[in-house]
Image (tube, rainbow, N blue to C red; front, side):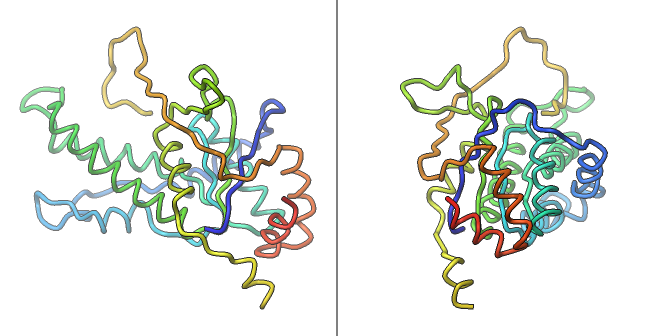
Length: 252
């Protein structure tokens, strides 16, 4: 990764072409068809096989970090960047569905109490920890491989209610991980090179929602307003591909 941007989306709902967005979702989400294909033996899953089958590494220019509630808007932005600038964008939420499918399949087979419809609490905690760690590995690998991370800073991704004393908070553990990892990941300057050349498994009866407010550091990201971002996209359509990224770096 070379650098990152803190994209403020604050002009109201981002216009979404839902037929195109839904087609993108259908084309990019991996499905869990056979648990046996992900296993070394009848009791042991292979994390490498899960990564290869459900979260394969793809060539992407931009990692788009966003709230699950902003998935449609994120895909819309990804489609615009692809169509206008010939840039490939990685949308992390497209693999979240795969995570839940995998967890449900594992829990139904290994964590359900014998003869009951409920799950063993400890076994389910173990399965969730393993699968979430695999997902975290996949996301960190993608952040490291892409040129740029763009964080969609919206009312859904940053919790204004829990952000105090100027310190931003997010209720998403994934955004917390992505922002922190993007601050720690190795930096590679591609510009010089170019110049030279929740679905729940069961209904839960509760009047309260469990939330955890995580740090959401963005000081290492370059601020960019939505209007500036759209202006860059329009200008970058004249460059395409890696030259569009170069124009982004020169502009901010």
